[in-house]
Image (cartoon, rainbow, N blue to C red):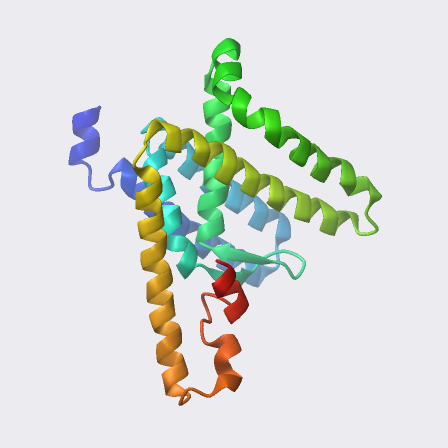
Length: 221
């Protein structure tokens, strides 16, 4: 099995890069068709496949590195009900959440409680707060979407990332380096665009587009 994977033109680790491109094609096509259920199912299918291959071939570290590198280069594309999807960063984040589910389902109950006890113990109140608050909102859909996104980010950046940082002590510095490289490239892009406009402060707000829609989001990142 290992020889086959090594000699194959499409290696398992390359799927982490290939499948998001397939997701972009699918999302773009069905966005044009305005077929909301198919868009959702397509994204779930592609990210599910990507999560399976990541889990199957133990590519979690590669997934985290790819996410760190691509986050600064993510661009907004139309999604559902005037909401936006940051591609490919949020595709990778959704994939990481699905990989986390695979990891949880694979472990026996006793091993599971030992492996995830520390994370769930203090994160559970935050997750419950997001879920409980949904019915009290005047805009249920907006509240549900807001809660889902927050729970997704909590699951990935506090639970999934935390577990693999403990397994790989040097991973944190490498993730910072990869993310820093991306941010520097975007900064150079913004500086170039500002130079094109002769350093006019009026255009400062949008110089990082399409990667960041304004300079405050770039600074917050």
